[in-house]
Amino acid sequence: MWPREPGMRDRAANFRPLTPVDFLDRALEAYPNRPAVLWRDRTWSYAEFAGIVAAMIDALETRGVRAGDVVAIMSGNRPEMLAAHYAIPAMGATINALNTRLDEDVLDYILGHSGARVVLADPAGARAVGAAAARRGVPCLVFPEDPAGTDGLALLDAAPLTSADFANGVADEFQPLALNYTSGTTGRPKAVLLGHRGAYLNALGNVIGLEFGPDSVYLWTLPMFHVNGWGHVWAVSAVGGLHVCLDKVDPPVIFDLIARAGVTHMACAPVVLYMLLNDPARETRDPARRVRVASGGAAPTVTLISQMEAHGFEFIHLYGLTESFGPTTERHLTPEESASETHVRARLLSRQGTRHVTANRVRIVDTAGRDVPADGETLGEIVLAGNTLMTGYMNDDDATRLAFAGGVFHTGDLAVRHPSGEIEIRDRAKDLIISGGENISSLEVENALHKHPEIALAAVVAAPDEKWGEVPCAFIETRSGNPLDEREIIAFCRDHLAAYKVPKRFVFCGLPKTATGKIQKFALRQLARAGEEPK
Image (cartoon, rainbow, N blue to C red; front, side):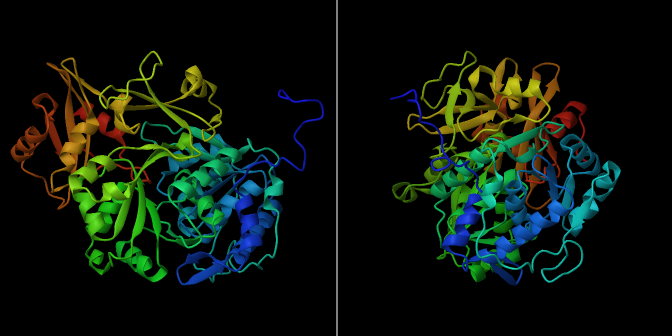
């Protein structure tokens, strides 16, 4: 019976391209009057939100956008930014969501490299991208400042829809849905192409893994431009949840929205968690109303876990890359684990866990491509294979071939696999410090530094050394903003690290970060080599 018998094939009745745009079509059928978006003091139903999407499609078509084109958008988290994640893909076009903190040189590069046909922007985004767009001859359409505004590209009062077939514009589930540029932690960004099929499956994985449901209220503390909001722009709509848009990370506003809107979920970089927990507004938080917080990056410390739990936040540790549609593994506590001591919970949550149900297969391999033993000690590279991986790097065949060498995607992240099956990242391959022939994990040193109560953020890189070849150099942000006593820090490190792993140099400064809160280690490596400090 298989391979296919004659006459057995894909038919119009049994095959339709997978696309997350279809989640909005379903929303109109299942819950058109349910609240879809809250921004400032205004709420839009799913029928009204679909009207915004349709109006955006009309505006883009009027300006000549067609299937296959790239449409860039530079905006904060507002209804039009969310709508763009439906309107642009529904046209068969590709959305390129731009970092709002990118400088003009990088924006000029991206607009030129992507060949963007049009740029959409809020007023702040227009000020940032306007010069680059004008230089490239790309029209910039600007949203009004306020929800009731009528100037510029005013879409928020569009007539509601009663039905739609937005997904009908998607001819091929493998065609590009999004073009995302890597965050620049290693220099010039790569252009990552993501398809409809992967976005659809990733969204469903988020629904299951993060337990989104019709009563979910999702606060947009995560920038939507960060890997398309990790796919949450589609996942929340798939179940009829409420998107609560946030203009900027402002702790008092966040705590107010959590209480007023009944927020159940949010996602953010670790730096946002530290901002929330260090702000006096945290005292207004009712810990009885639990909020699930998904975060990636640095492993949570005992202090962070205890403070989050005291204020009603439940931590979920995620791992992924732009090339994997965002998070591809997750770790949260079981009810039994939640009853364990704080240091045990922190240790468990420091792991990246296992793949979520629709995500890529996750392996850890040695240099010969063989799986390392699940002993929690043997280091290898994380490689991925599955349906939620990028199509490739746009206009960069060499980088694409290298990334997919051997039939897997090479992440460049070094990790171990525990007997439980969970993975735990130990370092980036390029962040491994080799000092006197000994391998030093920069992540291990950073985790030790983060245990110090006065250290807010730490990043460790290799600095050249005549005797040892390389030695650890620590760049540190303190909670007070003032330097710490170096002798005290060295003594603290010796209590937590082998002597050869203790940094030989400490720099107290603000750390350079990307718009998504990632520390730009490539910049710190340059400074360490030059013996300088960030300006």
